[in-house]
Picture 1 (cartoon, rainbow, N blue to C red):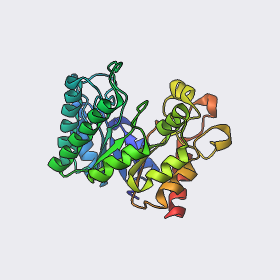
Picture 2: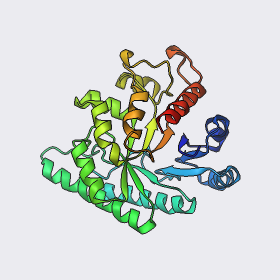
Picture 3: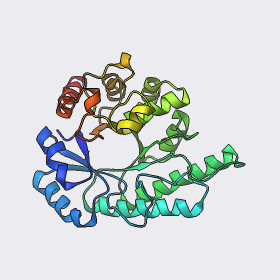
Length: 283
């Protein structure tokens, strides 16, 4: 089943998270330069479908964490730094035969925006989207934009306008980050998913109950024991809302394989099997 895959940032756990779960898709991120030949061999040997989360190659010149995006920053030099990293990723992703590349956008500015009005910030964000669209055309490779807040542009109307104007861009709906954003910004997570569903190209699956969970445990694996009434994202509902109007959507587990002991110490593979069964019933 190539629709469902697992996020992977090292050869040392590719077997554990992808192959041992019967998956045939990997989303690859932040590999050391010396690991790329081995990654290429694994992809070819196991005939894996590939997507890439920028950056694919760990670079010493990009700030840490490498997922940070400056495309909505008022500092033009920082925006160019992000674009340089994304272009390098696009070149490598094309060589690896990737289906698409995930890029964080929109994202919060890292520079103080006091005194800058919303219209100017929107124009900067729009120019960022335009640059991504140009990279999409240059490399003939779709880009899935993953919103990361706090940002005034993590809104259905702005995202739908961007994707409608730039067909090479789709949305990557991240269940964990969108849950935190909905709590912080006061919108309905499930309504957001339903309204944006036609524009979604991929889903990142992990879970939390709040920002406190994220700070303590980062990306918690999804698991059928996670009850929405206890504050967890209702993963089954999210998948139903998105897949009911977007059957081509790709689904990628974006967590580690260790479930926090204080939260039950569950086997992450049980969550993988659960999602595979859910998806099979929805399609």
